[in-house]
Length: 183
Image (cartoon, rainbow, N blue to C red; front, side, top):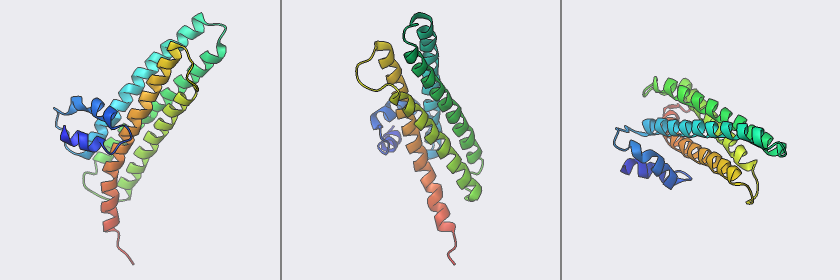
């Protein structure tokens, strides 16, 4: 638990990070790579849950609120953005598994895989944040407020996962920098 807390202190949302990861403290989190993998899995899980909620909300809006087509389209756009986040987080987890095959080898392929994970997770974060921003203001229905909170949660846990992954990736980059021979 101490390792999780100290790692989460380097994220933008440390309390949320600790809350999401504390249930894994009894399992053996054996370093920053494993912690990053768990954080990405938590982010994917939240995105999947949010996507399910949004799909139901969009279906209900379409069926019962014919007068508010704009809200339906906004929610549908948010569904697409969260769906993209799900795809990108899935790709990031696959890429991290490819990266893990290299163990301690440091080469251009490792740095390429690291860059790929960062790109996938950053893009997922951008999509989730765009969903949040598509509902501006403070006056909104309970349903819209719930959608916004759920999308914001996806963005925040994804931000934390990105920070934890970058902490892990920094070790590789520093090691790679030490192995580069100067002319």
